[in-house]
Length: 193
Image 1 (cartoon, rainbow, N blue to C red):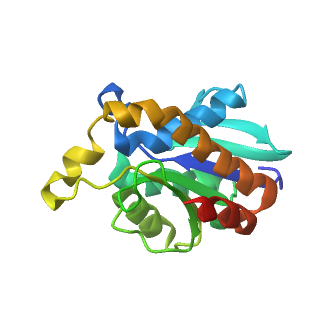
Image 2 (cartoon, rainbow, N blue to C red; image 1 turned 90 degrees about the vertical axis):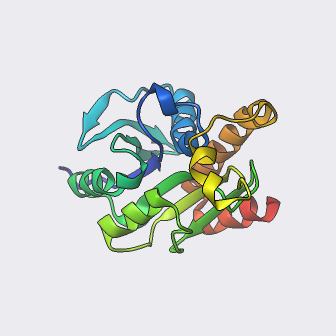
């Protein structure tokens, strides 16, 4: 590979039609929106991930959806970043977050997993937490034994009505990280929440 410097934006989710419009798949929906805006397709598959390579803000960026199911998100991302020589701190991971109310966004870096199985898998695969995360709030069902049904469930009509805005806002947050750097993006996005 050349000595080009790449960035990577990964949206977390579960593959297949069954999960396509569920809360757990909001990461997939966000990278899909970024790809559509950049007029690119997820037309390549390697290491159990589908991806697209595009240019955003003059930077070479890979948009990635791991196809390994949420709790095995780490290995495909580890292999892709190793193959394309992308440092872990140049990876942005977009994922659902039950600790935030629906539609709330938070950008974090080098933080704990918050119990998110996809993030746990990535931390295990890389041996570090030093990557950027865009946490997209999906709310909490309030009762622990309803958590799985909540994240694997579809959006309520009220959430559905606001979903496009949430997806666009999260895509814009990724954009801001690329254009202005993570600190400035955190200051802007996290202040709104």
